Image (cartoon, rainbow, N blue to C red; front, side, top):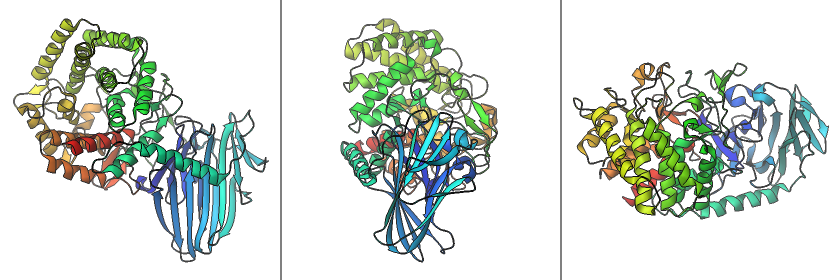
Length: 588
């Protein structure tokens, strides 16, 4: 199925993708980056799924999907020639265990239903030991144990667990799948309807705290709920996406594991939460940042596990064919070992935002920032892999140098605005030196634009961040020309590529072909807004909103030719960019 056909449910420990066909095709347990037990998304139903839907042979089935307002409770409604049923899926937060509840109810007529469950551990590779136990069906494999409790008696069929039943108006059947460590007993069963009410109250209370009152409030709230769902509650870390290896181009090999926390997203995520009234979430994310990056700045990674883990060894799984036959399937991410200078600027910007909005950080926070600034001072002239995590030779990326300037600038402002202690006179000289260096070497005078790398003529959408981070105003002629050049030369159908897709092999060493990286188009919205071209900005913003699926979810990228979402889904960075662009537009 297309990504547009999936909805997200989760409990802030992990998350699942549920299709309009009633099938849960992706789930990792017990946390976002654990092995998948449902991996049909990257293979076939034999790789693990859980489907509840009208039984085949009843004629054409029409399916609609929606969230209950301001919640992460997902409803699928199936209409057949014989009648209609409603399937409600949710994962209760805060219950101390991983559980998926599925409640199916008859609406009208008489509909024959089928439940089909295949649990496959180790990303679809391992068949668990299944037996009847404790009032349900137990499945055990190594450290993982599952217990299916249902109001319908299931049976085994070709290494799957199956149940068939009929629904009339007012009929209700419930199914609960619980994960627990195999060496411990399963948790007690809870009343499904009570858990549903408790889950609804949680999400509506959380959404009700949103202080954003501008235009597009519904889209902003849905994006914020998605970001909350991608938060790993035990630590406050926010994963980039709950999926791995969804291709940036169908049939391509740009397939990466995004179930981790990127430092680069830090400052923009803080802005999205703080600007919407979610101070606790911003504080938790900031605390995660401090814990993750503590230590030697030379060992700083750009990406960490949800609890701050550093070892994210990348391997390929040969047992899965990949989404729509787009191998390889990867787990882990080799970008963790790259040197990316820009993340130092993102970290310093995030800490400055925390101070500005009154989030108190530990006394060691400034000591850590002093070490970060010292590292930047000694290493800003070095080439790096850059914001796009180039898997090729290091270069002097203009964006990276600009973000080194941001790191020093935020340190200066920490002294000037908050009375912190540091060699501010030296920092001011360094800030000017980096600024001059970028304006000299990152600017192509012949073309009249800032370019991707020093000495290059290529454009790069990351340079749209120049006015957003305050390096130069949008009205500076050099910046304005760069914005217009990116809009015209990297644009397609009004959207913006990261860099020219036809030259990607020369840049990153990978075969050409990827979708449009959606945050870049939101940055274009921000730049147009800063230039006072609000009508253009609103038109582009509305176009981006139209690319969400029917539930308001965005992937990492969009394929303008096939007109579909591509890349990992849903993507936190896309939703962060949506929230920040809406705020900027509303206040313009």
